[in-house]
Length: 118
Image (tube, rainbow, N blue to C red):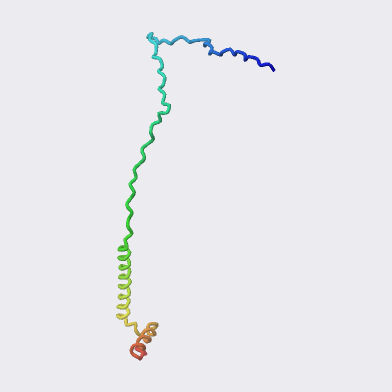
């Protein structure tokens, strides 16, 4: 196949517009200002909002002192309830009434050798 020279391609120029509208005039005879081309902002991205600064909250130390005070308070309340119960038991003279007489007889038999209630 013999080589043939490439065919020349006619250049395609942009054709002239078929109709050019006339410039508009206002009633006063002045032409409106020509539109300015918008400025290009390519590759000019503004920075985003600044990162908020968070200061870490100080860690509250879990104090053993608080737990110790709470435990002592609970023991104090229990002790007051037991003492109040013993005072009521004594004032009502419940030593020899059932069902307490079995408990009283057991302890007096252990300590003194004979039952307190007969």
